[in-house]
Image 1 (cartoon, rainbow, N blue to C red):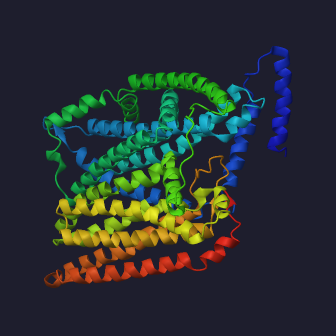
Image 2: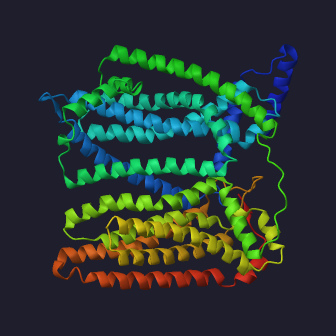
Image 3: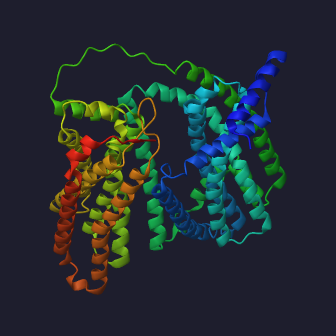
Length: 588
C-alpha cells in the first residue's frame, strides 16, 4: 500500500503537469482528497496510541455524555409529557404541541452546532498547522477546501447524532411515533451539519477578525469572555430552576397560559429552518416543509462552497505571511526586581497574555461564586422540600469544594505550560523551592480570592450564617492549597511540553484529566459524604439532626487538613533531587 507521502508526490507531478498545460492550478482532485482524508485518519489514530492518548479524559468525556443523555431523556421526557397536554381554548392539540417543542429544540441544537462550526472553520482554515504546509505544496484550493469541509462535517455529524437522537427519543417515549419519524430523524442528522457549516462559514471570517482584534487587547478580551461565560451560567441556572420545578412536581401548566402559548406559537413560526424540519418529521404541511428544506440545502451548500473557499484563500495568504497582523511598540528594559517578584510577574503575564489560559483560570475563578450561588439557590429549597430539613451547611460546603476543584484544574499545567523555557529558568541561579513556591502562591492567591467572594455571596444571600461562611472559606482555601500542591508535583513528574512556537498547550493531557477526576472525588468524599450522612440522620433521627452540625465541622476540618499536609509532603519530597535530575518534558 502506498504511503501518503508517495501519493502526495504523485499528485504533485500530476498537478504540475496540468498547470503547465492549462496554467490553472485550482483543480479538484478527488484522489488527492482521499489522500488528505487518509492523512487525517492516520493523525487521529495516532492520537489514540500509547503516550498520546488521554485515556482518563476520554473515559470522563464518555461518562459525562452518557450522564447528560440519561438525565436529558428523563427530564425532557417528563416536560414533554406535561407540555403536550396543555390546551389552547380548552382544546387539546398534541401535534401542535409536539411541533412547537421540536422546533424550539432543533433551533437550540442548530445554534449550538453553528457555534461549533464557527470555531471549527477558524481552527481548520486559519489556525491548523497543516495549512502552512499545504500553502507551499501543489494542493489546489478546491481540493483542500473539500477535505477540510468533510472533516468539519464528520465532527458536526457526530454532535447531531448525539443531540437530535436524544431529543427525538425523549419525545417518542412520551408520544409514540411511526417508522417515518425515525427515518426522518436519521435524515435530519445528515442535514443539520450542512446548515450549521454554511452559517458557520458566514460568521467565521467576522469571528476571526474580532479574535485578532481582541487577542492583543488582553483586558478587553478578559472582560468580554468573562461576561459571555456569566451569561452562559445564568442560562444554566434557568435550566436548573426548571429541573427543580419538575422534581418538586409543581404544575407547569399554570405557567403556560393563553398569552404565553400565543407568544410561543408566533415565535415558532419564525424559527426557520427548524420549524420546517419539525413539520417534516410530524408529516405536517409536507409540501411546504420539503420545498423549504430543499431550498435551505441548496443555498447552504452554495454559500458554504463560496464563502469557505474565499476564507481559505485569505487563510493561506495569512499563514504564508506569518500572520503578523499587529506591531507592538518597543518597550524599555524593565528595572531589576527580586527573584520572587520576577517569577510572580512571569506567571501573571504568561496567563494574562494567553487567551485560553486567561479563560480557564482567571475567568473561571471569577465566575465560581456565580455557580455556587445558582446551584445553592436551586439545591437549598429542593432539599428542604424533599427531606424537610435544612442542609445548607453541607450543601454549601459540597458545592464550594466541587467548583473549587474544577476551578483549580489549571494548576495541573504549572510546569508543562513553561515549555522549553523551563530549561532556561533551570539554568538560572534560582532554587527549586523559589520556582515551585512562586507558582503555588500565585495559584493560591487567585483561588483564595474566589473562595472569599463565594463565602461572601453565601453569607449575604443568607444561605448560611456569617461564621459558617467564614468556616467554608477556610476549608475551601485549605482544599485549594492541597489540590494545587498535588497537581503541581504531579505535573512535574509527568511534564509534557508543547511543540508550538509559543509553548501554549492546546490540548489537555492525562495529567489534567487525572487532576479533574481526583479533585471531584475528593470533593465528593469531603463535602458529598457529609451531606449524605446528614440527610440520612435527618431522615432517621430528626430530633438529633441539629447536633450533627458540630460533627460536620470536625469531620470536614480533620479530613481537609490531613489531605493538605499529605499533598504538601508529596510536593516537597525529593523535590531538589528530582529538579536537578529533570531532563524530561515529553513533547505534546
